Length: 291
Image (cartoon, rainbow, N blue to C red):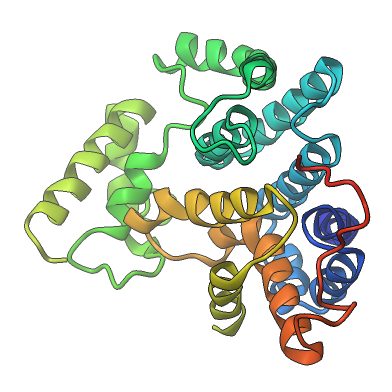
């Protein structure tokens, strides 16, 4: 509950930096009453609420400092990203968005920002240093430097004869004794690889809500501060990619739920007050942190 509550503050900061003070406040208020923000931290003790907080905090801190942030600030961002990846490696999907944000010079097409390469290297290099002890440990103990090795399991759980798109615990080794025995015999890494092959074989055979709809609509008409479209579209469309081939589970979407809430809040403000209202218009008088 603490992580979900602190996300209100992080979401206000992110909304302020991406769009306006009013958008940040509206998003924080929506988050305070969001059913999933209330339900999930109590019903499911897992990493989702913590990753939602750290991802939102990371994006807010990144935008506050901007593309031209001091190298020390960029290194601190790398520490935060690395700690987030230790909790869950799924935010690695945001790396392409980070590359575009730091490398592309604003308003110059495909021309690169010269010092953006250095900042991106510092950010990703620091994050890599943070996760490296765990990667070394996994390489020594499990035989793979992966932060997590369960991708193959999730692919198989979501792609089999009994799959309906939702999480199917009946064939997950945590709930299925036969699969657990197979896991014990093969070992963690080999079992995950075997599960991936079974899931992909099934795919090759061809057997194959309101807040989200508001967010998608908002992304189509988004007119935030410079650089905000790259961050929002990148995070919302890149993060879920790996889950499109596994299965649907509410906790997998939860890390980007604050961003979905922010996008929905911006659209609701525009629909309620009109795009030219001071409540719905992006702030132009303050310097853009994303420039």
